[in-house]
Length: 77
Image (cartoon, rainbow, N blue to C red; front, side, top):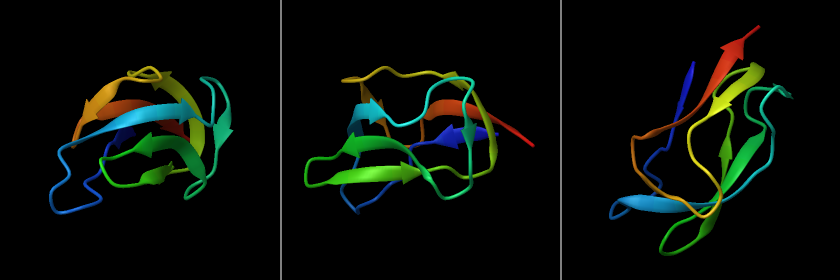
């Protein structure tokens, strides 16, 4: 399953990845925090959309990510 950066606010166009809370190869549980992002107004935790194993990440800390971009992949279990 692809993890996509959602739009948290009406005017939000992108966000900066502050840090990953899980590493590649680690198990994740649906709705648990996966990463922290900073928008122009707030810091937000992105929750995992599914349970499984975090298999890939496509962005690094301090990267600016557009809304709708694929940021990671989870292999569902």
